[in-house]
Amino acid sequence: MDFSEAMETLTFGEVCEAAAVLKGIAHVTPVMTSYQLNETSGARVFLKCENFQRVGAFKFRGAYYAISRIAVEKPDRPIVTLSSGNHAQGVALACRLHGLQAHIVMPLPVNPMKKQATTDYGATVYEASDRRHAEQIAASLCENLHGILVHPFNDVAVMAGQGTTMLELFDQVPNMDVILAPVSGGGLLSGLCVAAHALDERLKIYACEPAGALDAMYSVQENRIVPMTDPHTIAEGLRASLGTRTLPILREHVAGFFVAEEHEIIEAMRFAHERLKLVIEPSSAVALAPLLRREPFLLGKRVGVILTGGNVDLSVFWQSLEQAANDDSGRSVKKG
Image (tube, rainbow, N blue to C red; front, side, top):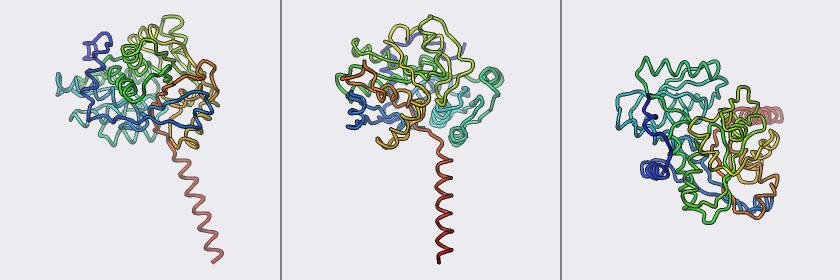
C-alpha cells in the first residue's frame, strides 16, 4: 500500500489543512473579469486564473500538498508519478522544494515544452509508448527504488490541494451561482466540489469535457469507470479516465456536463488571447466554451470559471515571427 492509501475519502477539513500548508508557497492566483466576455456570454463571469500558478497550472497545489505529507513521514523515499503534462511539472518542482528525488513517467505523445520544464526542475523523465506501458514503468520504479507513487488525480491529498483553488475563489468573489471547470481524471473537480458545497450547498458545479473524450460524462451516468481508450481532442490534459475515488464524488456533487466541440475549444483559446490577453491551454478553454456559445442555463448567472493552465507550446508562432523578421531584414538590405 502506498502512502496515498492512508486517506480514503476527501473531507473539507483536509482541503483546509492543504490551504494552511500551501499558504506562502502556492500563488494566490488572480480573478479576472471582462466587459466583453460578460456581453458575449450574457453572464457575469469571474475567471480564476490558475495559468498564473507556479508551473503555470493548478497541478502544483495538489502535488505540493501530497509530497509535503510524504516528506514528513518518509523523507528518504523517492517520488514516482506518471504524467505527460502539468502534474509532472508540479511533482518535479514540489520534490525540488522538499529535497526529494522525482521520477516522472511520460506516456506518448509527450509535449516537448512540458518535458523540458520537468527536467529543468530536476526530475528524471522516462518515456512510455502508451498509458499502460507508463503504469508498468511506474510500478517497476516504485518497486526497484522503493519509491512512493503520487497519482495525478486518484489521491486524496492531491484532490485536497486542488480544492484550495475554490477556497481562494470564495474569498475573492461573493455570491456565485455556477462553477465551470474542465474534467479529466476528476482530481481538480472533486476538490472543487467538496470545498464548494461545504461553503455553499446551493452552488451548481458543471463539468466541462471535450466531445472527443466524454468518458467522465458516461462514467457518471453509468456509475462505473468508462475508460477512454482512444481520445480525440487537442485538450491533451483531458485524456485520462476518472479514478475510483473521484467518480463517487462527482456523482454526488456535479450538477451536469457541458460538452465542447474541437472548434469551440480553439475559438475559446483565441477569444482568451485576443480579447482577454490570456494564454490558456485547450483544457482551460473547454470550460470557457459554454459561455461563448451562450448556454441558456448560464444567462444572467454569476459564473466562476477555473482556467486550469497556460502551458501552451508557441514554438511554431515564434518561428513564424523570426522568419518574418528575417524576411523583412533581407528586404531592407536589398533596398539599401
